[in-house]
Structures are given as C-alpha cells and as structure tokens.
Amino acid sequence: MLAFAANSVLNRLALAQGEADAVTYTGVRLASGALVLGLLLALRGAAPRVGRIGGSLGGAVSLCVYAIAFSFAYLQLGAGTGALLLFASVQIGMLGWAIRQGDRPGGLEAAGFALAILFLALLLMPGLTAPEPFGALLMVLAGLAWAAFTLIGRGSTAPLVDTAGNFLRCLPLALLLILAGMLTEGATLAGGLYAVASGALASGLGYAIWYGVLPRLGRSAAAYVQLTVPALAAAGGVLFIAEPLTLRLALCSAGILGGVGLALWGAEARRRRG
Image 1 (cartoon, rainbow, N blue to C red):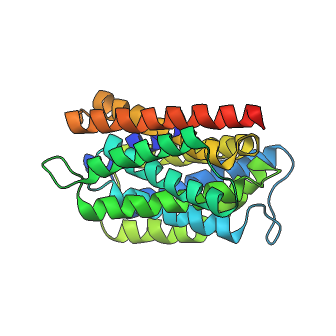
Image 2 (image 1 turned 30 degrees about the vertical axis):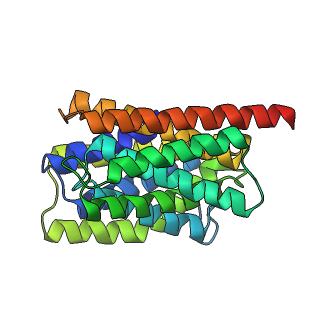
C-alpha cells in the first residue's frame, strides 16, 4: 500500500510543479517498469522472449488505461483527493464483481461498504473544496481499470513473470508517449527521475508484490485493504508537496477508512465462521 501511495505523491510532485507533462510522465513510468522487470527476469534466467511473455492482453490494457487516466487526473487533483477517488472506485468495481460472482458480503461488510460510499459521495458533492469534475471522472476511470488489473492478477501463479509481461505489452505505447512528449513539453531531469521511481519501484516492483499477495486475499478483502492508501497519500501530499489538508478531506478520509475497517472486520468474521 505504501508503493501505491508513493505513486500518487510522485505523480503530483512531477505534474503539479511543472517538472513533467502527463504524456511524458506516463510513458517513462511504463517504460521504466518494463525495463526493470525485464532485467529482473533476465537475472533469474527467465528473460522474456517475443511471443513468450507472461501476463495477458487484458492485464496490459487495464494497466495502460489506468496509467494514462491516473496521470491526466492528477493534473487537476491533489494527492490525497486523487487517491481517495481512485481506491473508492477500485472498491466499488471489485465488490461489484465479487457480488456478481456470488461472493455475497455479510451485514458488517455491507454496512462498512455503505459507509465508505456515503463519505465518498460527501467528498464529491459540489462545494468550495469538491474536486474538479473532469479530473474526478478520469480518476474513477483509472480506479475501475485498476480493479480489472487486480482481478486479473488474482489468478496469477507467477507474479513477477505476469507483471513483467503486462508492462512489456505496454512498452510500444510507452515509447510513443515518450516521443510525443519530446515533441511538445517533455520533462526536466527531476520530472524524469520521479517518473522512473514511480515506474521502476512503486509500480513495477510494487505491482509484482501485489500480484504475489493477491491469491491469499479474497476479492472483498483485496478491495477493502486498498482504501488505506488515501490516508497515506494525503499525508505524503502534506509532507512532501505542501498540499493543504482540508477539513472536508480529513473527515471524508476518516469516514471511508472507518468503513473499510468495519468491512474488513466483517469479512474476517465471515471467513472464520466459514
């Protein structure tokens, strides 16, 4: 979860301070993730070959949609608000899929989920500190794409291979984005380093670890636990980017995280009874 929060903070550090444009940042992020994961596989003697890479087309498409929407959304959203929208959308997408597959939540889980959605709605209500609508819509799209990426990853038996394969499938698009960025605004050295850190560490290695733990989590638990990220991202935004921590964001974060805690408690109780 710290890696996920770091992505929000690094993205805002690059974009909010004009160190990189969203196109270049996304391309460098995806390319550096592919490079680092490919090198790790090579060091293990399992270098990917053309036509023989892990992952899936669905995983790669969901990763690309998430990364592009994520970057452009953060042109208009703060780190904490963006992460809150992102992972609330992830939870909605994953729980909706879990219910569709017959994984019915218990009473406490349903109450926690409803509480989280209520406070998400309060955050998005029009007002002085409500997020910008188009940025919010893009982040919701990123969240649903990440939910798809996560659900696809639950079936992985080779987390590093599959994560590397998904990033490598995104590499042609990443190179096109970098080229387009070079022809327009481009990025400073600092912006490039933020993108590399996000792609190589927080994304590439972080997502491989996430794919590794997913099989041990139920669909519902995997959705709930990710909503700890907004609080971490909000704290990072305040500490590293000097973003204001508004009362509205603080209260909504507390409400959503409280709902997550209640839902996790209910999920664990249901698991023990089962």
